[in-house]
Image (cartoon, rainbow over all chains, first blue to last red; front, top):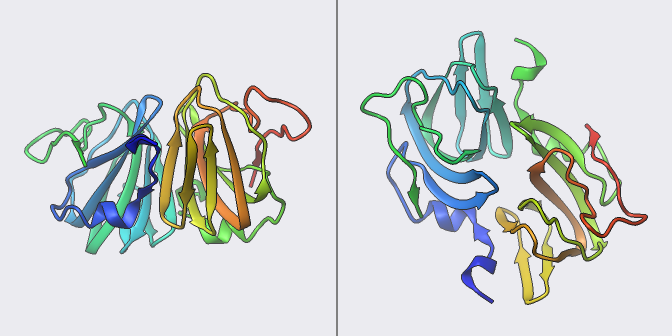
Length: 122
Length: 122
């Protein structure tokens, strides 16, 4: 069996990096990517005009701030930010998050700026 | 805040149904669907010619049988079955699985037959 037939263990993958707000690609799924990120502190307000974005919290607690309210996610909870909806993730503690969105989606969406960073392979 | 801004708690959702091998849609994500299923026993061998399929085990243990070997997934482990790869899920114990694939993907793929079933909204 090749490596491509091995399961992806999320805990093992999260143990392989420590940098915050840096997306690590762990799998391709059609035209999308499964990515992992560690989040702590506040990111920036931004919008993905052309794509929905899935957040699934694996550990910790993530608040997805929206302009009309906050969505608070604990372990085993997911939320899809609809395309065109401005949002800003924030976490008081270090939080491990699985993301799913189309390949090429920039972490900072329409906002750009110094926190823009392409995903890295893990 | 509307219901669409509530988080999706996977444990709560799994507690809402008991039927096996019946996919329950919990979210849309672009042209794909996030679905939950409880699996126990063996499904059927089938192929999705046009789409990859993501399996993420939430609880239990799932074996994704492939023609060249088995992929065994425990909680917090995921696997993407590439398009065109014949597979057959099997679980000795009841296993809770999150699936992600394009809307309209049939559970039995090219095999069809009596176990074919469209996803239900949960």
